[in-house]
Image (cartoon, rainbow, N blue to C red; front, side):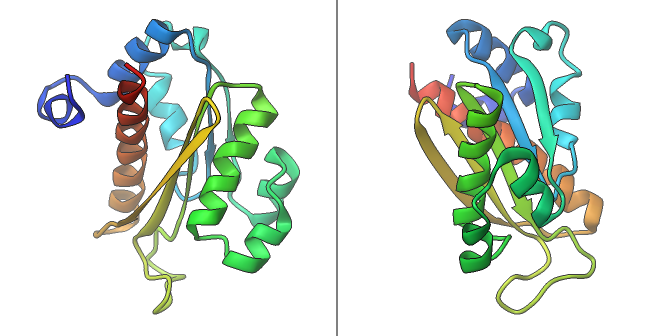
Amino acid sequence: MCVEENRRSNEPPEYRVYRLLKKYGYRLTTAESATGGMIASMLVNVPGISEFFEEGYVTYSDAAKVKMIHVNPDTIKTYGVVSSQTAEDMAESAARTAGCDAALSVTGVAGPDGGTEECPVGLVYIGCFLNGKTVVTRHQFHGERMAVRTAAAEEALWLLIKCLEETE
């Protein structure tokens, strides 16, 4: 089933993630900033997910990204915390730190404050590391803070599904 067919089904994406992780025996971690643990929360709705999801990181501050998952501080300094490079570094660093095959990362501006012309409210970068390859997507979500965070968390799961399905 392709990602677009999955999106049209009534099955929540975290259940599809679970089935794919189980199929391949992959272990997953998360590194969340703007979503503040929402991806992990969605995953733990699935009975049995603990076989594949043992830990996730909420790295809300720059310092936490460096301290907890070992993001290179020069990445944040050079490109900014809300950037494709930071999302990539977060995903790769989280996977390395947790010893996992897969990792999802999210960095962005949920709002309502904090946006700039270059980095507006709703701008989110999502990283997906899988077996040594990292994909980063850029999104401009709209709505209030919770809507941005929810959309980012769901989109992260869909990105993981896409990456996992491409291995089939």
